[in-house]
Amino acid sequence: MPTKASKTTTDHEEIRRWAEERNEHPATVKRTAKGGGAGILRIDFPGYSGEESLKEISWDKFFEKLERLESRVHLPGQNGEWPNQPLRQIRQS
Image 1 (cartoon, rainbow, N blue to C red):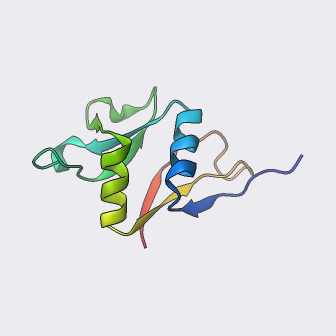
Image 2 (cartoon, helix red, strand yellow):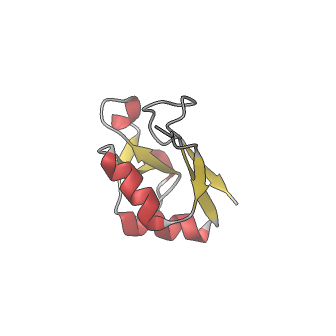
């Protein structure tokens, strides 16, 4: 069975689907969020250490900030490089 390689994308539906398949949700680093807006973007995932430092945000806020920064998301592949790992990187284009 072929495996999927990692991928960098700006496709909102692909990012959202990838995260939701893993019960992950968009978040911002609490100390960087100003005036109700998103600060540093993250994808939070259950069972990891972000509980104290991250605040869940809407997908709309997440993608609004992602577009404003002209950034893209690096999705880990399923080819052994990061098996079953959460999304970790958001890169500026």
